[in-house]
Length: 314
Image 1 (cartoon, rainbow, N blue to C red):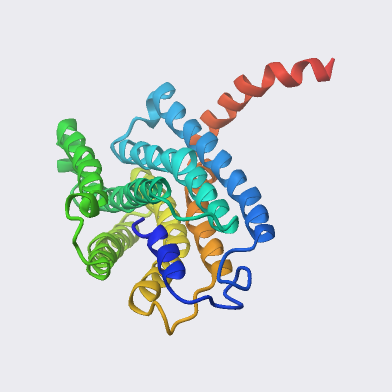
Image 2: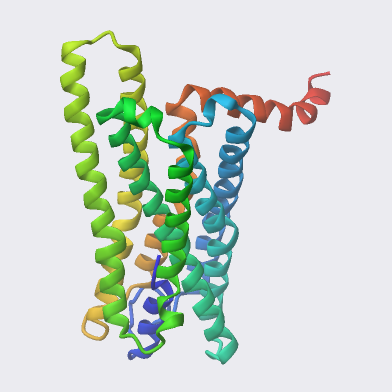
């Protein structure tokens, strides 16, 4: 999300910090960057391949074209953007700092592009999760209205998620003079804490409604299916929270305590690894938790790798 390069900029604007996780001059060591890039590459490949599987499964299996999965499809698209664009750009930026190159204008422009794209993908992810939680609450709480709602309503919601994400990622470009601290605080509150609060409240309400109905009618199959879907999305949200919270805390510290608080490159590299790995986890969760996704994934893997493995069996 917003500000990964703001952290690196803060680090380079302050005096050298021995022991800051990189070399003795407050830069990441080449060795740590090489190791990090190895793991980043794995994450990027899994994120792109896994989420392409989600997108393909959605389009080839009619049973997966549910309202919830339209938002899952959008989330997968955001995760593909992370794996295909954000991670490679971040690896390039890490290597640039590790090689102690001068911060010329072209690199600063690349930094701005990376920050905008990374913000766009991250904000889009959490807004998709928020939209899913609201849709699940609507489905469980007002099942009849949910079934009768026209699909264009959800298409509009999807458009708004992408539009708001693009708008939020472009604030720095549209208002160049905005204070960096204000921008970080705005992003943290509006695009992390607020959606997270809505998500938690929605799922608390879902569990309350679902448990009450289960006690009254424990054999109702459709309700059990909805609870399973809600549980799966809750896992996705839980992983998202674990992956993103350390990075946001680091970002807030870097902005509001740029000099007296120690900057640690190793911690930053690890926190970025955490939140990028979130993009590769979601397809695994779907495959484990949702039978229809699992069945379609197996079909796709057989189609992809079957012709390769077949000669080896003969």
